[in-house]
Image 1 (spheres, rainbow, N blue to C red):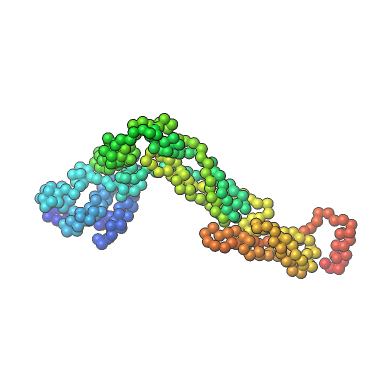
Image 2 (tube, one colour; image 1 turned 90 degrees about the horizontal axis):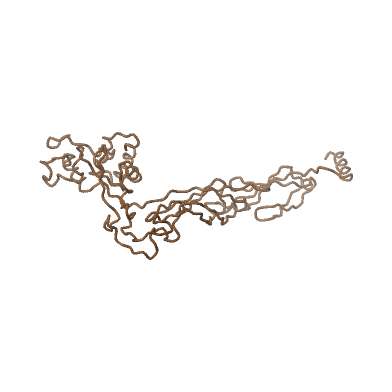
Length: 372
């Protein structure tokens, strides 16, 4: 397809979307393809440039309308009679794509914006994006009954945290705050970097004020202006009732603090449940065994069974076979995501004494003679 002698590029085809695709569909496709073809992953340089070129047009309502009417020729250097002809000569590509350079919207790239920023020398993250600290992982051991009923447990974490003196601002308390001269209070600056792909233009977080738009005339003496201090912090972890060994808990904002203007990462706590001398667990059921005299199995009676809620009286019917499993409803583990509890399953076994006195031995021999 040609437009006024120019070979027209099919931007919809390049992004793999339909001509009636929504803005959200176009953006999602762009992000996916940009990740797939960016140079750091060994992608094709020209393909990456084509993808960005297509999104610069289709991602903008006005430019998309012009493209739908006139095709990509409207965006070529000199297109429609040269720059400025019909008002279509410059659509913000930094001089076109013929090796001159192009703009990158770091927000639309998502995490890829940080990757490209590192690759091509941009001093900050994506436009308006708050710097985020690293996530942390920790392990917490709890008792069996704490897993059943829940508990508040203390956990000590050694991490980069906000400086206590300046609350993470990096400024000495009481110091004068002035507008950042580098970004004029905007918190962002524009940077251009010439690369093998052309010239990248990006709006990035101001490196001098970390995006806050203002600076203190005196740094905090405790953290030397970094806003960060590595220290031990004691957290209280709320362990929910019914949690299983190996499950994780997320504690938002208790990861590493990156510095002034940033946001702390999250802490992921892996729970390990200690074994119990009496009880074990099968999904939401508590399982145990209890040994009772053979006479109770034969004649029946009542026994006290230990449960997580305390002793419960259980009736043993006459002639109960060894190994019978009794179910104590609602005496198990609470459902972590829902209502109610599991059951307690107790297996009844005969208790065989290690030693017998003379009277016991004679009685058992008499029973043996009677076929019992």
